Image (tube, rainbow, N blue to C red):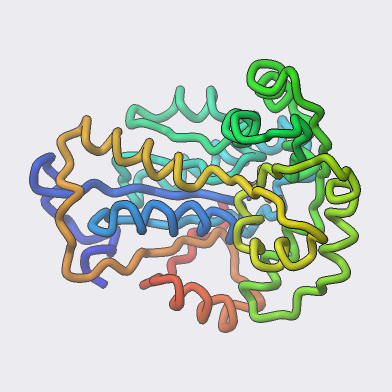
Length: 283
Ligand code: DGL
């Protein structure tokens, strides 16, 4: 685990170190982004942090969310010392990015709904937008729709329940196919709709269940691969040696609170390549 121990001094100079990327979300959702970054940049040093102490973000008022994200990152940054921060959360990115960027001198990558690629793909010009209640109603999301999908009809579904189902899945609990069917029914009822934006990082973790629940094939789009490409280009620009594959690529995880299901969650995290778990505690 040494390569991921944030307390261990390492040679972090460009051209010798692949760069350390902090991936942050309210819960397990950002792991869908982490997996894409890992696939693209297997040599990169990744650190995952989830603000489970304030989960869920999707139903919180904007001002509460902005100050919470700011607080948690302020506590995490000196401990992790990342070269790049990825806010792997649409709910937070669509409202808190400017403030976060003002506090951190290194690049901050946000994850926002993949409206542009969805509009580019859709033949029928009817698109589904599946996010948290916060994300689907944000002014920022509306701006993306106006700018990139002005000629499309966008069917929005905001669901906190689907977020919880993804959390349950990673804790080894049963995920009810009926519940998923009910949640996505406003989208699949639109017979012309051909493309769905997974505008919450939790939802790619439920992709097999979503595909199973949909009565016909749909094109499901998320932001994971685009974010991995963005991270790579930032690391390249910083002369990071992303081609190097370290001896141990396990990623460290930070939680902001104890988790009552930690043993079951740990199993999923291990399966995804996690190493040490750290508790950030009250922030
Ligand atoms: N994973 C998050 C997102 O992408 C937020 C989920 C939540 O905490 O409600 O929006």
